[in-house]
Image (cartoon, rainbow, N blue to C red; front, side, top):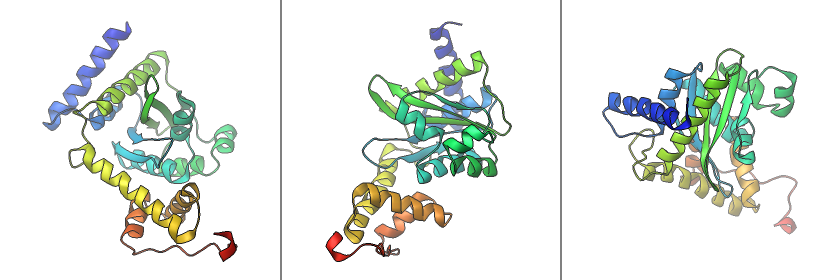
Length: 243
């Protein structure tokens, strides 16, 4: 199958998903089409940036939602590596020693959430890379050559949709909402730099560490910080001279 015919077929399947929802195409339709066509249990997309916090855009089910949140909260996992390296990260078995050594916190947490395998594909056109498409399977196992080619085509389609002016967010209909979600995480991180006297990077690490330690979503913790319902204690090892 040529790349052109593959892309046309996949774009048609994505359009069918949007038609069933009665709405214009968005990245959730790409995920839903991929799940329907490939031997995977679910899929999700996270927006990623080298300069600020990533955030989940959509997921097809509870497990994929949990996987997106775990990776962004922990800062480790196939999604993070795929974005950093700019290439697909295929993990056919999360329970191997290699996976556990590579992602000592994410791998067991993902397996506990119900994933046996995870496949991550960066969304990329030239130097532009707005995020990552993740897919998971409940059982261990890889993708064959045709499935892998299709998965990469779905990632390319997701990139086009996400970068297009008509791309919607997963819930309330617009990238403006997703921008607000991201802005709240960024605002909370900025507030913590002032509150704790630390760098932006360290503040974000503290934010997501709190989310993971308390079993909460990163966005929820950020909202509490911004609303001043949550205040982080200072590092006991720091003194006034350190700030």
